[in-house]
Length: 313
Image (cartoon, rainbow, N blue to C red; front, top):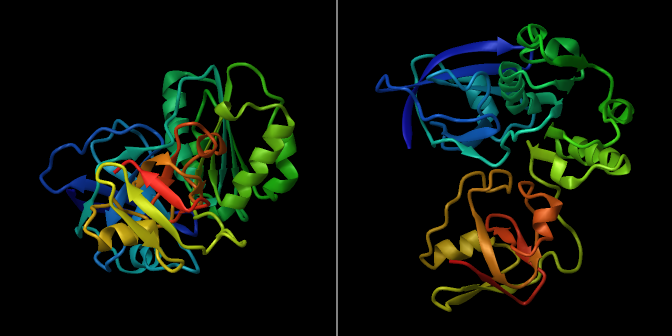
């Protein structure tokens, strides 16, 4: 855990608030790369994950928080209560959405999904890597970092106020070697991006995404069935009822589980699967990862299609 002080708060568009955090001891905070996020422990008792944004060269951290009408506490607290000089606890950065080396880059952001992609745009600009950023918002005045994006010289940054559903077919080119895309926004937006990209021949390995909201709950005959979770290290096993998560059952039996978002969007609780068929409900892993040979289960939200799930704990 890192102790930080809120060094500044300012508006980014009419719906978002930028928050600058600096170390309480005055030292530089740990290094990070575009795509990283931190856990912010708020005094109201909730823990929220926010992407780091801005330049990686700064000694402090910058996050940007959208005002959510259906806030569960985090967004409301930051917009209404957080003040400069206030102390907070945060985690060290984690990165499940890293910017990788590519010949050309396409960035697609919707809403507050701009935060990690703004950091990527700055890094690509500094490296001289050709890129195009398409940023979709409902109203021009709600765009965050609009002034900063207008200063970019090597890349092409465009803000759109028309629904991305009508523009993505135009903005996503046919797949070519060396072209990678990073996508961030609501789950529905990313699903549409994936559909258009697949139709244009994109390899999933070239399409990188991060969700800013949990996946829709899965419904069906198996969704609430009881199954057994087993620890590979000790052979201990416990039933997981329909009204509890794997993480809750493990904690009740004295097993330490690294939890953060508890919604399947941060990856903190991903655990190797030794045997069994996972009912994946997280938004962190790609379809390739969820169907690959070395699977992981999000203990906070996913379940099991098989009667027993053996995990690497």
